[in-house]
Length: 136
Image (tube, rainbow, N blue to C red; front, side, top):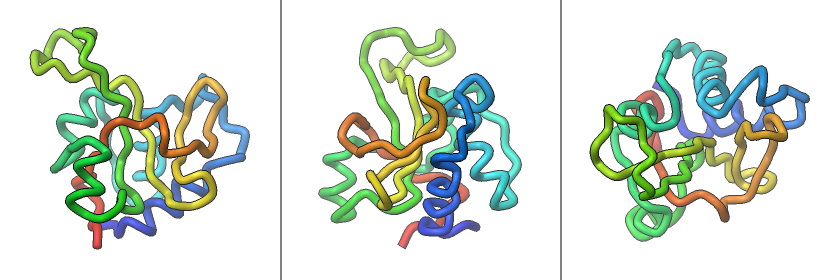
């Protein structure tokens, strides 16, 4: 089991390395950080991660109410209720993007069209607690 701050620190270390999105998309970024810490996994994308990598998912507001903050190492998602989730899911949640809360720098790490970088917590709508990470 990985602890949250360790997961967050590893994610933060990827920022600014110049890794382009075409080489490492958001799903690949999360998987690569897990791999760097000894966890091998292969998910179908952020929607699969939202449903199967997390043992608990909630809105940011629910997370802060329940835990007093967004824990370091929590997964961050942009979830829309637009009906565009893959056809295998019929629950109305379209998790279109995933990142990792670092609580360092700008607060989060992601791989987007600009490559692996820091970003603020503002745009994320949901939080997921990763099954491989222990949060304190």
